[in-house]
Image 1 (cartoon, rainbow, N blue to C red):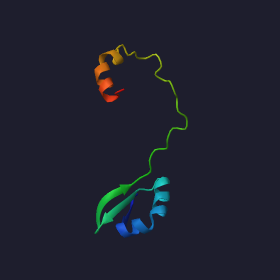
Image 2: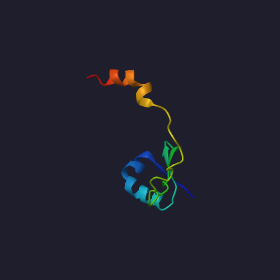
Image 3: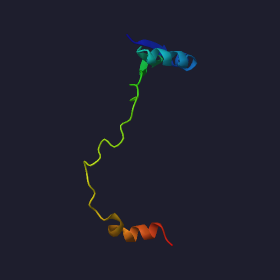
Image 4: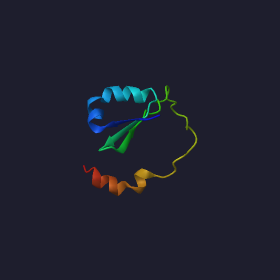
Length: 78
């Protein structure tokens, strides 16, 4: 169940409200009694990144230096 707080309370109690949101409590922030925003916890970031998971799955066959040589020369003169 969500709890509703007004903007002033949300500003003065933000740390406490963030802790509640992190614990799974939904917080609705209201202005003049009308709900305007919901404060919810984000999903935790992955604990481990897997680098190179797409290795060998694609290939770039374009000759980018050749195809864009003039553009590159204009951007990097000298």
